[in-house]
Length: 210
Image (cartoon, rainbow, N blue to C red; front, side, top):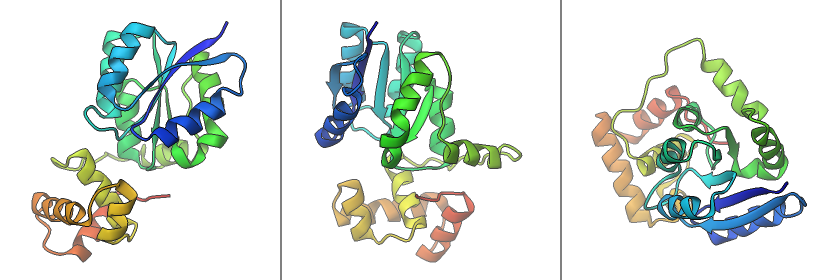
């Protein structure tokens, strides 16, 4: 019996790459594609897939919110979340929302098919680096980042990795001015006065990018 999947990502090239990878498997059928969480929810109600593979950082409705809605409205639909970022905050948030797997986009070619197979058998799947990250942090309390929006969180993580505003803008497909605005807003919300202290704060929070 074929597994019916919907792919959700706001970049068409990413969806095409995922489709090409998954459709090599005779028993996997891509029945829909969505550019954001809101469209995904409509398609799920209409197409009744077995599984959804979605990006965490989509416009209109992000992957975490969409996962939470799917878990409530369509509990039989399994969810695999994809992310550019490897950190405990995103991973724990996705799993708490109801995702069964969390995969880095950079390693999708290596891990996605394994995740699909595991999740289809009602198992949770985390790549070794994600599982190790959670294991390292399991002994201590997780301090949530106060009142940061998802895009601000992305900018903060890239700052921790040493990227400039111009590089961040290119990475997140936003303008350099928007990246600068996010940085100023983050500093204001966290009550941090300069970039060096902001980077130190981000590193202490474990916001590593790889």
